[in-house]
Image (cartoon, rainbow, N blue to C red):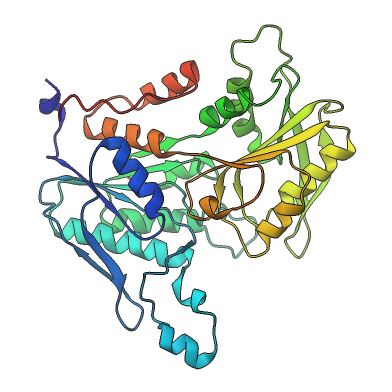
Length: 370
């Protein structure tokens, strides 16, 4: 019965250079090798892609977060010789920006479409350009919609992602979107680490309340007579676009606090909230963030923050490079592998959420001999 539901031929996994470690984990969860693909650069820096695999009629999944990454094996337009000539650090030649990895994704999608793939799913664990999802002032772009258009026009048939900055971005796509969330797995991670009866979950701003509520509900699942409470930081930005936490709603005195957010970039908001929590009497402060798209200086700032622990997902390459005491990685590989398999076999994605909500974890993918 199962093969009859698979409408697009065999499953083919491809990956760009954004997060090869995560791509390998996903492939391992699926018991399948990554398809061979040359994703490199021409001498002038243009993206060069050659899918070294037959994809005609197949179900192609291209794994490529739109994040910063570092790839020392990738030949960049600024060659090592050119770097030496200009006196630049060689690492600059191997840094891939958000734009590099977005363009890799688009070119890979186009290559698969022109090779007659049966269906193309863009697997984008971290979606950049999501912070400008609406116009706050008269002449601003809506970059989240622009990126959605680019991915669709390039030829993607579906979009699979984790924790969009704003859930409404799903509506910017004219193709089906499968929006996974890490709140269940992150909460289960902390259930074994602290006294969850007393713990209070903290949203670092008003926009993250729904996300933090989902995290709190999973953290306290199964407990009787638990106060339905949440602490919320009130934040505004200065004219220089620097975050400033000015107040907090919620009781945190003498209790362990867990800040839950979708991303860490500079770490400034997180550190401001940590300081305020300590000032308000929290006995210890933990933090969890899904995406670690760290900017220069963020690691140093996080090192000085009075955090008892910091949990990150591996949606970005930067997360696995944060070598700090107390940092723990909660992998998203299995949730993405399960989503890929269920998309491929035309099964319910809702099963993933129900299982994580009930069990706090996901079982391995069962391929039933396929």
